Length: 394
Image 1 (tube, one colour):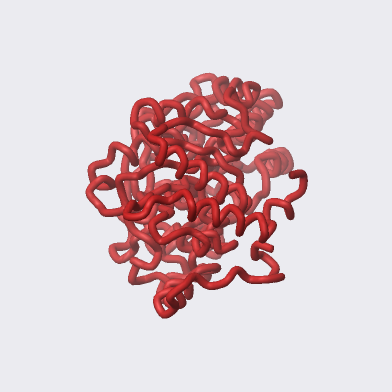
Image 2 (cartoon, one colour; image 1 turned 90 degrees about the vertical axis):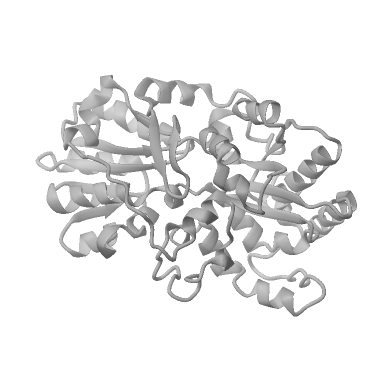
């Protein structure tokens, strides 16, 4: 298949749904975690979960970089914008994440902070060039996918001698988060686990390759299927996971072979290794401190490290007591389990980070599935696949 529409074909989706239904074993429950928020979005938007048998359960993982960013890290950025007179740049969704004192970066801008939304790290560099008398800080977030552009921006800043540019680094690592989920006593305690397998993130895997996931198959006996973000990609990955589980296999399979290789993008990996090194620990929203799960700037790039330049100190801040975002990120709760979901907490007024980003589980469920639970509870069979609607399979 060559075109996106082919990966949304309704007839092919029905064929995959039939193959999945034929593969499941009666009396057995299958629990698969889609790590990436892009997969969560696809499951909700295209109604994929409606096509799955009742005993195949999809569990949302912590693969939304906006969602896992803890409040204390946002507080550091707000301090820069309000108390240090810097130009603070970041991606759009990050500006809406709730922080301490009812603030967010957007609200900090309303209070006079110079907070600017950018679409790329090169935009922040351009601002630094245009404002040589102002300090410009780029609030960098994301998994391995967005790390190489940040590394490239830092190399350019060093080569150009941009003394007024720095980065507040919050880049985190996918394999470390998966390991923490598998080892966490709290995750194992709830009924949504043990997990039977993972759908691996496509874009991340384009950078790091499929090799890092082999540890989970070998050490933890958990199959991993790397999948694209179209509905047929996700359904094919589910079918591949079912077959592995039924056959007693635990392997890394690559459904997204059109873009992912075992070795990944070695040039991007080399660039990241040149600029960044591992942190000993990093606080994740919902997961707590995860060892060796994030990056910081190497000593050679220390002058561009905003934490060092401005003497910033991270202070952990608890989430809203009624917000279940942390448990949702661990896979032990669903958006419907949260008392705030759809009432106090909406995309227009998010209380937790899972409602901020379009890749967040709560935002995806609110936009595409908030009425599905009530519909299914009153109907003996899944709702029919929508015909001819924009955004629906077929």
